Length: 308
Image (cartoon, rainbow, N blue to C red; front, side):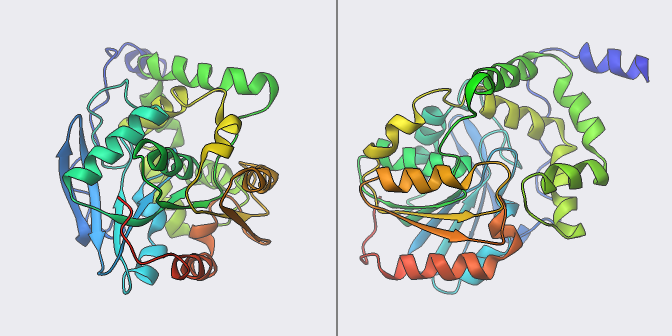
């Protein structure tokens, strides 16, 4: 065991080998998958359905599989696009320094323009919701953004300072992602991690996350995103989001306090807030029907025009 640890930490400081392409045949929505190169990344994209386009962005440490229950409920009326964020899932990271909010938003915009996607709305979970909001600003247009348990604030006090620093140190330390993925390949550990979010999972849902966290490349991509995420200033941006915004929050969220989204909605010019009492941080994976019902109501009230 000691020899294995030494070998792991002596690996060269480089990007771990990307997750093998294509995704396995049993990966959620695998039949919709394709690989798209848009500098500097090789993106894993899934497209299905007809109608106005919805762009779905997952949170840090997750992948497009997170929307596996939402997509079948929406694809009959909408053209659904899901992407794995850079370095996570099956998207191959092109460079280490483009995992922060602004760089990632710019790269999502470039991908959307290249593929001629014109979303009616962006649906984001957790950090993906913040990413969607930032896309709406940098694009200089006014898209609608739906945030599911949006990570609209940082950790409080000393944790707010130490968390991104710790993630950065971990992402720069040779072997950490390999070591973490090795010890994470355990269903009990994955269950404890996911249940700490306030959400409940079946064995199938747990196994998807186990497979992701068992991959060093995915772990490294998540650490890089966390290390480059804004430390300060998210709260200052709330009044600047002029898009039509809909925030859906599970009251049992153990990752981001529901009070954050409630306060943010009160500070945003055109925001609506809805609470779901019995769901946690991964509400859309727990009860897709409830989340989609809320999403449909909001979308039906939007004007019929493309926003990109």
